[in-house]
Length: 87
Image (cartoon, rainbow, N blue to C red):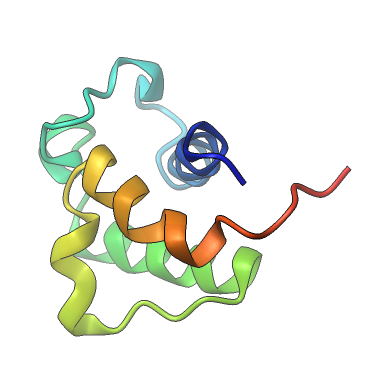
């Protein structure tokens, strides 16, 4: 996966978790929880969806790396970079 594909995968998850939010207006450096009003349960849903879709574990100590879109992409890219998108 490219960084753009990783970003799109995150946006897809956010769209599912927060369907009423304007996901495409998310800035890369703003706090995700503030930009689309995610509560702690929504955040845990994102972590669980990453595990379900990509079979990756995000330990609690690494949650800080999922704060912004750019930090999410930078954290997840090495974990997802060698994967191909399903056709």
